[in-house]
Image 1 (cartoon, rainbow, N blue to C red):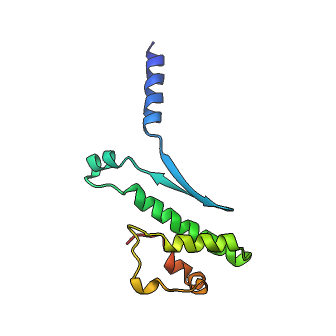
Image 2: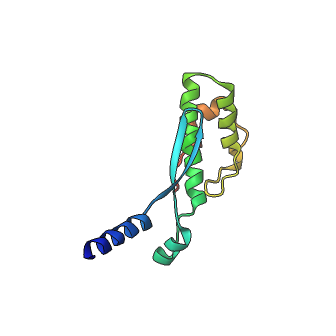
Image 3: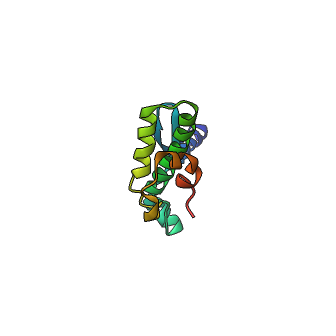
Length: 120
């Protein structure tokens, strides 16, 4: 009985600590990102990293991957996806307004700055 109780308790603890992930992907690029229980984190830390923040970072990583793939093999669908991500209205990664009218070649050349996934 003691062994079965310990085993049941272990299963409950493992299932409670399970991590959840989201995913953004396009063609050969796939980015997984953590999903947080924001209410639980606020109770523990008084603040939480919002899932939207993680999603936006993942989108930027996806764009970097797509830029690299595009440079290897030019593909119109990939180009359109990169531009779509570039035009996305990021909530946590604001872009300077002067940066809005940039041609595609400039996006590729400056991709590490344009799609920097780190939040400062």
